[in-house]
Length: 119
Image (cartoon, rainbow, N blue to C red; front, side, top):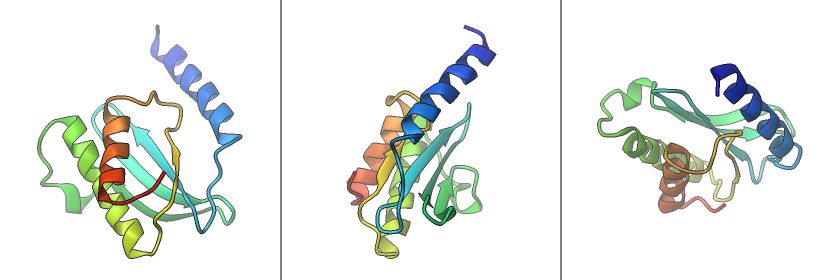
């Protein structure tokens, strides 16, 4: 399967799931993006169209993270959960963004749940 086919497939899955998954101020959408070497997570309020907070493996505060990509993903999940809980957000809607729920996506979700987010 070529890269174009994989991307097109993911975009179709993303469009189907985004028709159902919506974030609100009280229960924002935890959107995850995975590149080949990095992972990004953000909490989005779809009603106002604003990103409430974000965490990524590229940020300066995470420059010292070491370990496997899955371990880094779990740490990013914990970090976004801690930021959310500090803002009073405990419930979110998980948006895997068309990616399969395994590996780094699952590790991020497990890290966020472990830190206290409910979804």
